[in-house]
Length: 309
Image (tube, rainbow, N blue to C red; front, side, top):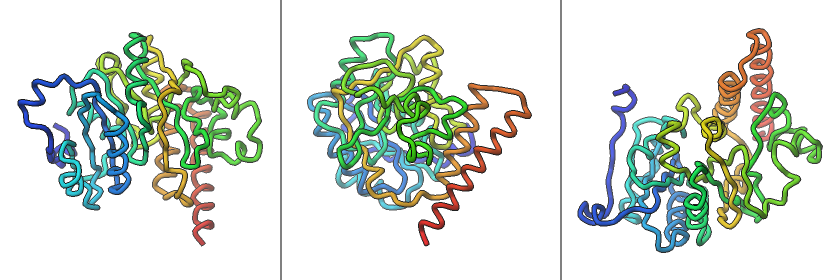
């Protein structure tokens, strides 16, 4: 057992064991929470309505929030199992904990700031059951204002850090060909389509594919673990698909005007790890690429500090 695993305590508030034995679960849902008590409660409310008649086992992995989340779930959502970590272990590792704690043949990993619209889990399940070589499916993801969040994308290349969803060049020149290629903005997102990867804000994964490929790479603390997971699935011969009949609203963009420095650092370290893993190159070139990515992180932190002032 790794040292950090010893910090994990499981608080279980589930159906009686006899009921779990008699019920074959259709779907497992893993929600990773960090200081988002109100959001996770709202997410679970939408999930209960959105799942309909599906038999769902739900696990919330709390990354040391210390905000009363486990107690609130015990009182308001007694059918939810809670895993409480003694430290913030990151998104990838928390998802893997949830995978290990569940048994259903399909797993939906999602952020606590998601609102699951009715029928969304069933639509994703229907596609996975109808396409046995599809490993991962993602829903249509909307922003809080109803606009489309570009949650299905092409794999990043050496220019993506300049032309991603949040980059200055994409904001200034949204129709440039590099951003359009990466974000798939020339596609109306109204039809089912195989894509390179879908956002980890909400994705459903086949457990059989996980057994073959493995869980999320825990060297990613947060960000880029979803890109890496989908890439590994595709390299193993599995497909990744976007299913617009399933709709989820992602509220993260509505209230966040300033990004924490640690989040910016984690995002850019994830970029570096991803490119070292999937696009190895000459050490000298790699050094300059890493330096440029870290410079970008530094500039973003300065911009955030000025925004706060």
